[in-house]
Image 1: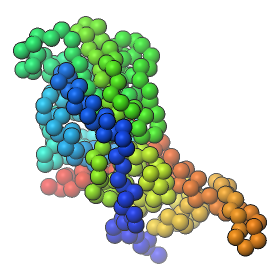
Image 2 (image 1 turned 45 degrees about the vertical axis):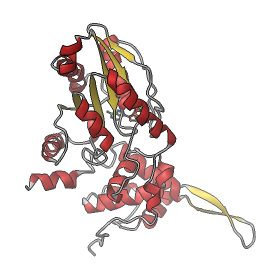
Image 3 (image 1 turned 90 degrees about the vertical axis):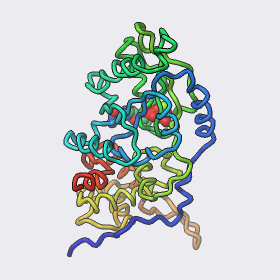
Length: 323
Ligand SMILES: Nc1nc2c(ncn2[C@@H]2O[C@H](COP(=O)(O)OP(=O)(O)OP(=O)(O)O)[C@@H](O)[C@H]2O)c(=O)[nH]1
Ligand SMILES: [Mg+2]
């Protein structure tokens, strides 16, 4: 029987997608204050969501004020063939700033995209009006982007590359590791180049559910704020919509399904993950399948690339292709 899938993804509690913790508001303010001493902005974004999450008024106001570069990080998690489609879509998308674009993998010290960032930043700075006015000897580059896209990782890899030093700023697999705009990190002696790490700043209100869920899937929100089972449900919906059935075997299913509970029950069974629940009737503890553990396993598989190199915005790329 052909798989029946939902036409539209829905989430019962849209409040789940409002996430704007205090450190973000504080970080936004700090960024604006530091901006006057910044010569160039490097915007980092996750290349699995090249269009989602970037429609941000703050970004635009920052980006229009200074020369900027767009770094699409985590390129190891999308296919090589997708990259030119992403560049094309970004170039043609309404209201996107036209910046130089580099694809990077911060886990690879030899990544060709990483090598190009600082020389390009120097070129942009030295051609800028401000540089010609002040003739400054040192350059400050601010790194901005949504949570967990790899800003701190990029700083560490650039510092290691240009100064041969170990990690200078903390990296983490969950959103919100960098809490405030840090002091400047020197990454190059001649010319003197400083980088400013910043906390991930997102729109206070993600209006479009699918965009919010894509950001959640890429760990831009902390999982517990949206709910692992809700994010897993979106992953299942997205995979089915894209006829990617690699999850079937992984989750111990015999055929594709659009039902997340069925998928997680099967996954929990396959993994042997149970949770003890106390019965209200006779106070005994009964072992039930651990759906949360199965959801974490499913999400981890996507995030590690085990379900394939997937660009979640591929619908937007395809639409662009057929124009
Ligand atoms: N696969 C892959 N993972 C990466 C890459 N760059 C960073 N990561 C991982 O992404 C996660 C987030 O990295 P961070 O550098 O802490 O991201 P951030 O943007 O500074 O995050 P916040 O400070 O929380 O906003 C970490 O688990 C990194 O190891 C990459 O190019 N490829
Ligand atoms: Mg960080």
